[in-house]
Every structure is written in structure tokens, then in C-alpha cells.
Picture 1 (cartoon, helix red, strand yellow):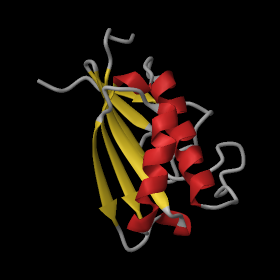
Picture 2 (cartoon, helix red, strand yellow):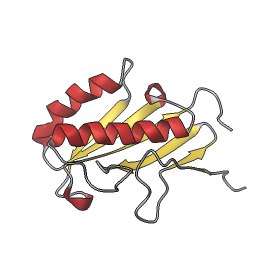
Picture 3 (cartoon, one colour):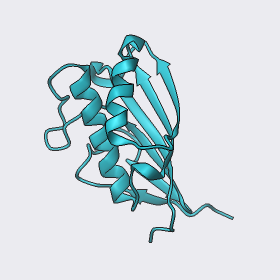
Length: 133
């Protein structure tokens, strides 16, 4: 028995720059690939400080969640990768503007480097309340 997978894609988030999809839906679960602070129109890293980068990542994730038929309230797990864990309070502050309680489960991981030299990347798992077809 093979698993039914649906590719989720939107031009409102950066297009995949490698061998991956923006997201994959299996039943009512959507696995969102990591998003970095790329502008989806230019495919260039946004200019500005880490706060600007974090906002762009959340905006990119939002576009993919909406393309899958959900929203941030459907995210059950969020992974945050930072090149400087000192930026974690900024993540918390900005995250509070995008999410409401109950917040998703979350991990924050300090990493040596991220693609294109950015300071933040995030991926997520979303469970849709109603199957999306």
C-alpha cells in the first residue's frame, strides 16, 4: 500500500531551490519545508536585521499554510533554526504576532550556518481540521 501524497505549492512563497517541495500533504497532515527569509518575487534574501528576516519567514510559512487550506492555528509543531540563539527572544516577540494560544509545540536549535547565510529558518507540521481536496 502506497501513501497518497499531494504536493502543495504557491507562488506567494519562495519556490523550492533544490530537490524538495514547499509542502507535502498526507491525509490531514501537512509537512512544511524549511523557509528562509527569501522574497518570493525576487528570490533574494530580504534586507534588514533579524526581525525583518523572522517576519519574512513567518510570511512565507503563512503563504504555504494557506495554499494547503489551513492557517497558523493548524500548525501543531514548529521548528526554529537560528545561527545566533541570542535572537530567540526576538523570535518569541514576533511569533506572538502570528500565533494565538494554544501555541504549537516548538523546538529552537542553534546551528552553525543556514542556506544563503541567513540567520533563521523554520519548518512546521500542520494538521488540517477538515480534509483539503
